[in-house]
Image: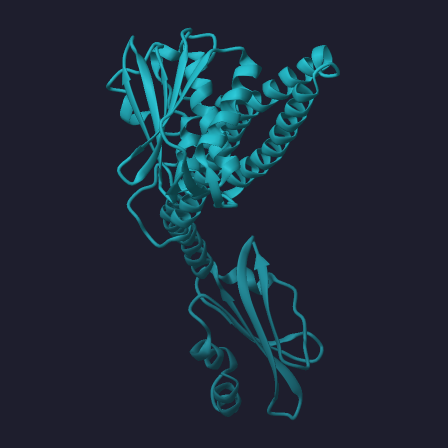
Length: 404
């Protein structure tokens, strides 16, 4: 515009020249240094622009102005007029259509943004539920465990390698380990209360015997002291073994040696008879020598003798014999017996026969699971034969070293 106006200023009337370059929706004018128009042309409908204040600027100027609340672009650049004077060529253009287009575009952008955000928000909500569901399930399960006192596992979906599945799998492994440790603790309390009862009773009985007649009968005194000392040692070792088993199922620590089976059984029967005041008939057909741990064998004998005492009122019979190449100890009672259906299960941990559970003395075979562990440790074979209502025979067999 500046170039065209400047070239035609001497040949064409000013307003005609300006009209050739004027915008179709605005005004083109020349303003001299006195802020007066040397010429001005407006497009139809924009005559109101002539009425706006005139401002001369000797430098390039660009801005957005509002006339009648309608935005207009205003551009002013200096140029050298025909007489050498510096004038300002100013263009004002109506931006109402552009503003409306921008407004429409802003509405479109808002709507598009909302439409684009809806699936994002929905997918985010669904994804957050998918991520937090295992955590919520885990929290609920832990609350149930705390309220009920029972261990529960998470129901895991199809196996995958994502972190959520690994977290659930780790939680289940932790619950399994806690449940196992809890069962070990219960087993320890059960075994300890059962196994410590017999030696404590033996010690108490011999101590009472000492108080009554110990000073008068030297033989009784020595026998009582030996029995108390032996039971104290057995209690200490028994406690250590039970603690080891309760911790992590460690192997039994053994002290094997050649032992006269008859002598050991005699001492055990004598201690048990004095402690519980029960009649026990001992029959010795042979006096075999076996290679085993004497304290563990005595503990094994006490378990079967204690069961025979609790579940029968009649005389208990103990026999020692040799069968082929094995030394055999048999303990027989005429008590309530064990149902045939339960007989294969009595050596399982925590298993109790229903009929015996109602008895005041506790569940039948409470120490039989421990008896199986001891027998396995000292290489002995144990077997139960029972007829319900008639009685039970427990046999312990060992490999033979030699016979006397």
